[in-house]
Image (cartoon, rainbow, N blue to C red; front, side, top):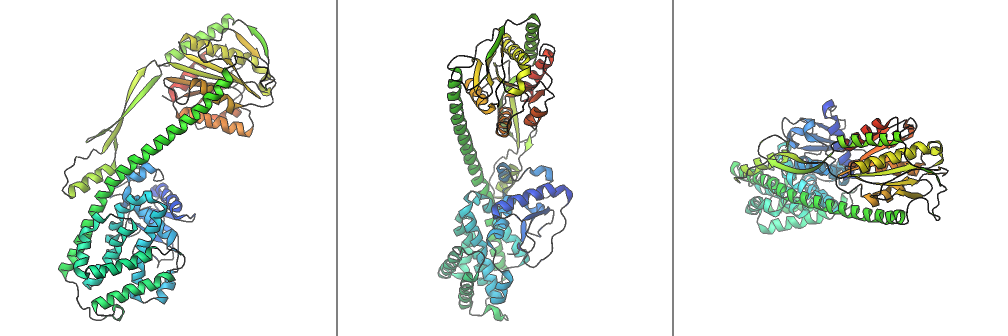
Length: 590
């Protein structure tokens, strides 16, 4: 357990400034896996010593040696965000090392110094050996999806530990220690039996199958110990381990002195060669395992997302049917107090404004994109470090495989897709003085969409939601409604509009136009933020037209690609601005 520094009581060096973001990610990731909130990450070249990572219980630090965990010469910008699952697959050795140290932080909570006082030196060493497989067994019961990451690194950790604390001189004790550090991990689920076949043969050659079977019974019992704050239940197992080896070797390890059956240089070399081959095999095998696992996880997430999207769309279509199925305007059973105040033909100035907006939409030249991901041997593209390491590992094992470490996305552009625009108009009391310009804006957008052969739908929302334009219809006149309602049902309005137009999951150019000051109640503000964000993520543009300075609306669209156009109380005067803003909203998500 050389990667656990239970002697140091002071903090490690200060992390270099350029590594601070990665250190913060390591700390957050380790806290999640450890079920704690106090762990901090120290990251940099040489951090943690010769192992990929190290844990210091006294200071709650997880140290990561980037030269070993990621590779020499790596820069923080090359790593990405380790909290993202895709990046964990990109750096399996580093992820496994962080996970392993987090398991020590979660399960090795017993009093180390107290155990040293109670146990003899040999018994304490045995306890430390048994602890490695124990924490991983419990950790994989909780996080089985991380098995491949452990497989990529644990035998590398063993090799590093042996630099800090070499194998015993006695060949039989050395074989037993190696078995505890490797074969026990097969039972824990950290490595596969195929990775350790050479080690197992070497161990049997030194100990015999009968002794190995007895040692296995001890480590299996240790792995079931689940009192993580009290190791006293492990003390007897550690004593059994030492007693068995004393019987096999014919001498008491704690007495020191001459070591019967001392290990020759050749025997040591054989054991270390077997360990090195096992570490290489485990690393190569882990890449194959993780590729399959990553594909399965991505498919599962995709299926889950599609199922969720389909369920959401079904709900929205039901609301759309309720909204648009009974005609346009406020129905008698609608809870809104809004009424149709005036209907008039559009003026020449308003028609001219619609023409300007249509021209701007036409000039937007929005391109719907088809994306294809290509892997290649040579640049350009994004370097896939994991593919490079996998190729090198396979080559070292004599497997001739051409790695394709460069990845790029090729986009095929489709000109002039169908344009779909959904318009939402606020009829709450705060909008009462602006209903005529809002009605003009609604007509202008409807007419502009018709002129570019698009499809539009429109809803008004206050205490209830009602349609003023069904999907595919044309608004022939300017309809001015009153705005007496005391609240705004933005959430219901968007769901109905999306159900009618499929703004979130549809194809072609899609634009949501919201005509409102954005002065809502708390729940509706959150709903507005959620749906605006969902639109921009789904590739649908958002244009927010506000009659005031946009103070409330700005807080809703902040952090998204939505376009806010304030002070639109005279839509005919700002028609060009509206058209340009609509074009920006479309192209900003393209």
